[in-house]
Amino acid sequence: MTQAALSGAGRVASSAARTALKVPSLLEVLASTSSLLQVVGGLNLGQITFGLQALSRQHQRQGLTDIPTGRPLEGQEGLLLAQSLAQDLDLASGAYKSSAKGMAAHTHLKARNVLHYQGEGSRFQPAHYLALDPVNKAVVWGVRGTKGFADLFADLAGSAHAASPGRSHHVHYGMHHAAQWLLHRHLDTVEELLMARPSYRLRLVGHSMGGGVAALMAHLLHNDASLLPDCRNEITATAFAPPGVMCPHAAARCATYVTSVILEHDVVPRVSTSSLARLCKDISDQDWQAEARRQAMEAPAIQASMPCCGARFVTSEIRGSTATATPTGMWRAARLPPTRHACISCRRGSEDLVPELRS
Image (cartoon, rainbow, N blue to C red):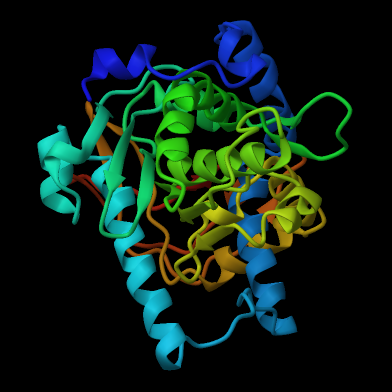
């Protein structure tokens, strides 16, 4: 089936497929991003730098760790799950290839079974592909993660957005729109493929942003009966390192059909507007100035410089200094005992250099 045939194939399955989907304007993107900027904008560089380190020390003292609960993959069931996840990982990374042939060479799929391949994305329209997998009896829908500048629009538009009118749960604004665009573009074709193959399942895969979009697509298909009203095929999604894209209530409803794979302490799956808000509050509760003083006292050496004959004075290992906070928030080292200073140009020395450290 050619790409041209795909764009017009199938019957209209839902109102979502009939209605033109508007791409959010730049003003709407900025409005959605503003919530993130408001969260982080209340902290200065000193608070972020030293507050994070103070918070890390506090967590170490309290013995806090972030280890997701789970169980080892054991026995035949665990082996089959591991093999399936490894295959899904190949399918997800295949979306990063430059062509359908490159994707097929990277996965177990045959090039002739790649029905559609879009290697470049645009604003709220991620790169993706559609393919048939006769071996595993699946229609594969892969979504690429962030690779180009245009993908950042969907990433950064991270405000909470109602999944649909009348529903209480919320989702990531930018990635939800990307999921809607993919469904709007290919839902007719996917329905036709599934209706012609009752034993096939719809297999959604993606990495990073693509994983979040794939999870939201599965969520929409499972919770909106108008999208695939006549299909009884199984619909699953496997998301590798997906960002937080839905509220806990919505995520709980996805537990039976969405699998998220997270590598140890990867920060991306833990980042959302709400998690950043909690982090900023924890940082603001820290005495970052005390942390800065502590680090200044423990520093083995301070280097400072001042103008001299067109070059710069360079100090060498000023040790045993003390630091105090000034009312303006700047940090000044106290008057230091005589130490060696040498200009890198004229080699002239100075004995009373007072270095400054700005927060």
